[in-house]
Image (tube, rainbow, N blue to C red; front, side, top):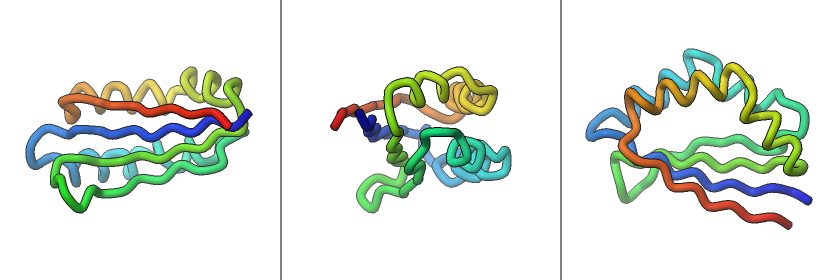
Amino acid sequence: MKQYLEVHYLVKAGLREEFYERILSEGIDDASRNEAGCEKYAYYFSADDPDELLLLEVWADGEAVRLHGQTPHFARLGELKKEYVADTVINRSVR
């Protein structure tokens, strides 16, 4: 069953664009999009909150999500989150 993730990164004040640029410059977004089972991996800026970065992900199945969580670029994103992100809210659904 497809896995849908809506990830809200609540970034430390004033650092949203820098966090996003680091994701791009380190190739985390492209590496994730190129994984087997990744159908969507897209970032969006909140129009209402200048410190929120939204990530929408669609994966073919739970195994693809599990394998994604074991990649070096996923680990690197975790390191960047320690530097830039105050909180993360994840909404999941399966269809």
